[in-house]
Length: 145
Image 1 (cartoon, rainbow, N blue to C red):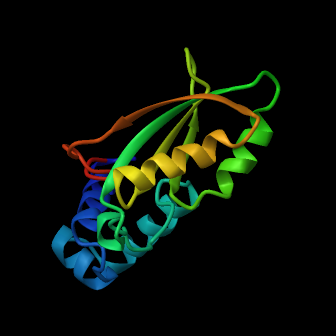
Image 2 (cartoon, rainbow, N blue to C red):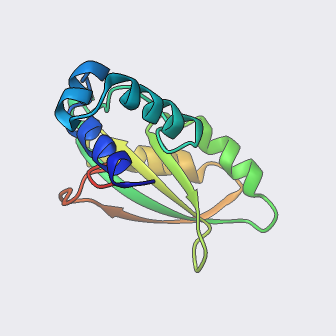
């Protein structure tokens, strides 16, 4: 990835609905160059989608929490399958250390968050949770290359 690729990604993040022609104009390069770079970055998995970034708060889910999970030995696949069925879980990451999984979760209220956590704990594969509620977002996802 070179400087032009980095500028391309920064500009696309700043202007998600920008067309290739306008992107080329802003970067001072030919449209064909921009198209080739976007295709290359997509093929390499650097650009993974072109969909809109959806605000959880805008959908009525203003509470953002991070829920750490401890999983019963040998039951990771079962736990992950159960987590797939909880629509308020946006992401799940396998981790090292004291916890096995980290979930990014949204909720309508703290009462709703408690219901979501209870649903997570309903899986026999999940032994324990540890939850932290985010008070603010200092650097949003995708704000830096």
